[in-house]
Length: 278
Image 1: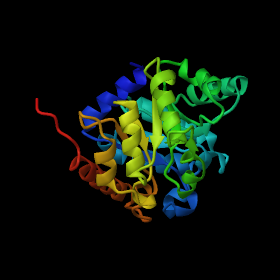
Image 2: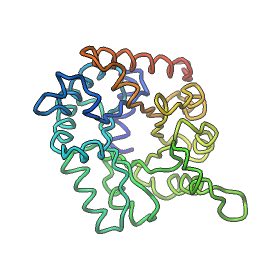
Image 3: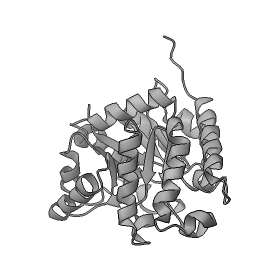
C-alpha cells in the first residue's frame, strides 16, 4: 500500500469524513478585502483551509484556476501551507495530465517535486506507458480519469468496445485494477452525477479508492453516490465539492460559511455510510 493511500485512510478515520474541498479560486468571486490583497488566492485558500481542515479527508487544487491568473506561486504556497500546518491532510493536484513518456516525466517533476502534491489526476487516453512515469512513484497517488461527471462524458467513455457490450470506462477500470495498480497507488475518477456507472466501477475495482466530483454545483446526488461507491467498510470515496463550499458566501463571513457547508456535506455523506460493527 502506498504512503498516499495510508495517509488517506488515516484522514478518513481521523476526520470521520469523505469530503474533499476543491480549491478552485475565482478572484472575481472573492470578498473585496481578500481580492485587494497582494496574494489574494493564497489568502483566500488559507482562510478556507483553516476553517475546514478538521472536516475533510483531502484538498484538491485545480491547476487551471492558478495558471489562468499566472498564480502558480500561490498554488505552491497553498500546498506548502497545508503540508506544514495540517500534515495529516493529503493534497491532490487536479491537473489531468496525459502525454507521451518523456513529456510525462516532466509533468511528474512538476506535480511531485515542484508543487509537492501527494497525488495527481491523469488522463489514460495515451495508454499504460504514459501513466508509468507517475505510477512508479509508489509513495504518491495517481488518480486516473475513468467516468467523469460532465454531460459530454457519454460521447467517448460510454462507447461499446468488443462484442460483449462492455463500455470504454469499464476497460479503464479493469486496466486500473489488473495492470496499473501493482504498487497499490492507483485511484480512479468517477463522477457522482452517474451513480449506476459508479456502482459498475466499484464492482470492477474492489476497494480501490475513487475520487468522486460532481456533488454540489454539478447536482450529483450525495446519497446515491455514497450507496453506489462506498466500500464494505464505508470508505473508499473522496467526494469533492468546490464551488458549493468556496462560495457559500461572498461576504466577510466566507470562511465560516465554507465551514458550515463542509460540515453539512460531511453529515449528508455520513448519514448514508456503512458503519461496520466492531
